[in-house]
Amino acid sequence: MNRNVHTPAGVVLAAVQVLTEADPAALPPAELAGRLVGGALGSRLPDVIDPPTHPGHRGVGHAVVPAVIAALLILRYAPGLQDTLRSEVNAVRARAEQLPEDARWPYQLSAAALEFVLGLSTGLPVGYVSHLALDATTPAGLPLLKRGI
Image (tube, rainbow, N blue to C red; front, side, top):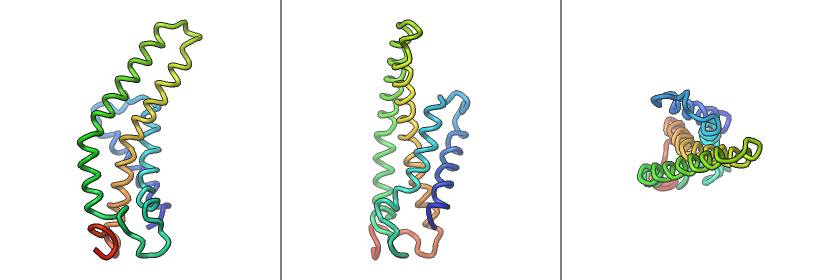
């Protein structure tokens, strides 16, 4: 498969993940954009790690064991990172509210940037998983550690 398949799949899977949340309409627009961009970028990441220069290009970036280890690390540490980012967004927005309206825009922009990064932190792994799931369905499948293993 190529990026013409992987990129839309990563975006769609990131969108589906948003729709499974309790209140997807409450998601800030910058965070939603970050998730969708993260889904697109994450869906390309395995081919950045293992460039598709030949049909059997699947190495560590496409391998099952490193992907499982990465998933476990993400499950362990991502919630803390996301909580920290949400706290920072709230602090920046609270600071903006203390300023005159015409002086708030730098803080509002900073909060939106943090929300975008928060979305990326959710969308990237979703996109990565979508790439691996699609490649697993091909005749080449996925290696355990790298090509040949």
